Image 1: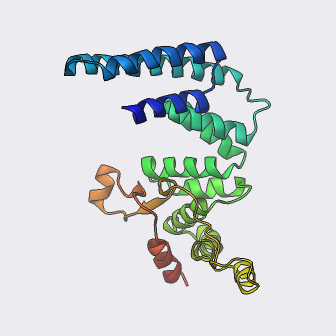
Image 2: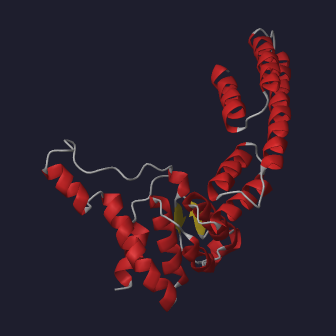
Image 3: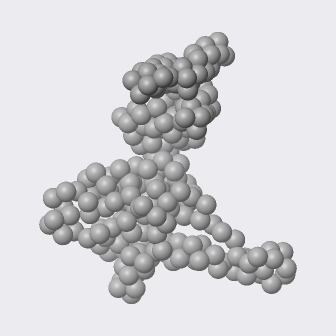
Length: 244
């Protein structure tokens, strides 16, 4: 129970900021409900306390979301602003606001936002052309974005998309394997005793897998799926090799 409570407190206090008075009230009420849960004599009493904790958390996050949303000014907001708001909306379960924020951040070139917008287009619509639209907006890349963008462009399979996909795929393989020239030089000089740098510091849910365009997969909308584990680049490498 403590881990659940601590997770609620962390998300509400850190991800979704609110006034100090409201935080104090939230903590006081949550601790009381936690004690009520721990001392409950039967399952119904425990369930009642847990439901009240969930309701309190929803109430608190709702106020925080409204405050954060009201503070967002489209005229001055940066890509980082949209990314932070998008992440907060995701934590609060505000899916529409989350998607909107990431799309706005993507338009300004934030790599995390671009990646999230691309994942949305692929998993929900199988719309590979979105990769061509988003690519010119990117300011810098993350490893997942390199992988996902290259794979989407290969699957899109036009002369324009293939020309862009190749260098992205090569960059991904180089960084994923941790074998850049700078890494090798640093290792040989003794600067890094353990070898190559690990560039893959991102969560596996930021990657996407492609399972083909079979009719069965199309019917259930599962051609593109968010990864359940870190990809090894096998599918992307197959497209890369076949395009040579």
